[in-house]
Image (cartoon, rainbow, N blue to C red; front, side, top):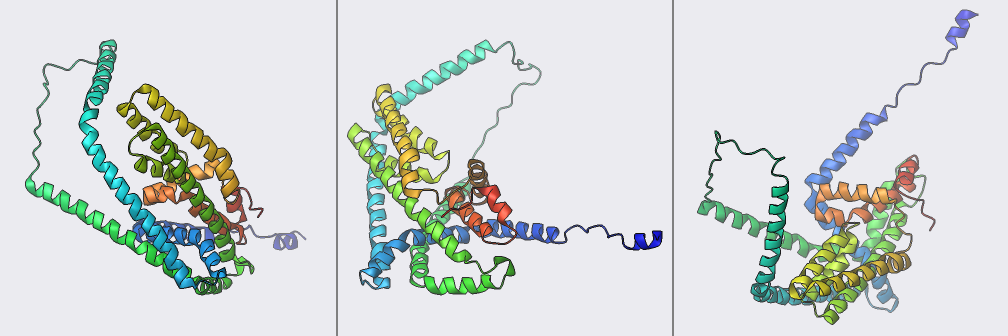
Length: 363
């Protein structure tokens, strides 16, 4: 009896064999995203633009406009708006260089106040900080940059600028083909995903496309509204460089948490140097009112609950994608993480990861 009982004893459960493979797969995916970041960033921005334009292309198609003509018309309007903005921005940059001598006096006053403040701190803590030893006098180090080093830096910067312009120019072409052949790409992707039994017949591409299209269209409207309101507000207040500060305020919405600082601080500083503290305070109040409007009315009403990520998930995603892709990664952190969440919701066994990122999609 004892032997039979021992023979019937169940063996201990073996550890899951797929954990190591999953870890290696994730590491390989992160390495691929990092070393191929230029390609992936270009593709991601083109896809975001295609998703934002898709409803308008469909609207023109329902008005019996051919798809190719509709896409070209929208791209022409978009590129024209960007060119017009660049021209105005270049004009205001030239204005800044012209006005800079007038700001030097105020800048010197501020630097003098800061220097005095630092000296007062040094005098207060002079007894705490160790005094420099007479036996080890400080050495004087002279740095001299060779002409070859200056030329090398200039050539490097020029090459980086040309590379940026080249990849930026490919975004409209990628967007055009994504919109033109979107049904073909969707069928091919669905066919590839259908071979995975963990999907259980779910339409992952449809779910991701639907969620990301709603988000891209909504956030694009919010960006345009905030940029327009901020530009008009600065024009009314008489603050210079509104064609620069206004679009920055709109695009800063795409940067979670820190975007407010990047948009508000430059406007307040410029208002202070151009006028005085009262004007800077007024600009700060206008920015605060617009940001309250965006956070409590515009974004909830236009974007809605299509991106149901937890605040902690948004912060972690901002840090992760920012470290991986820099500023473009920080801008794309929310849509990329939302797409990952939607995929996890539609893959068997991955629902827990989706719940870790945010609330379930009720749409």
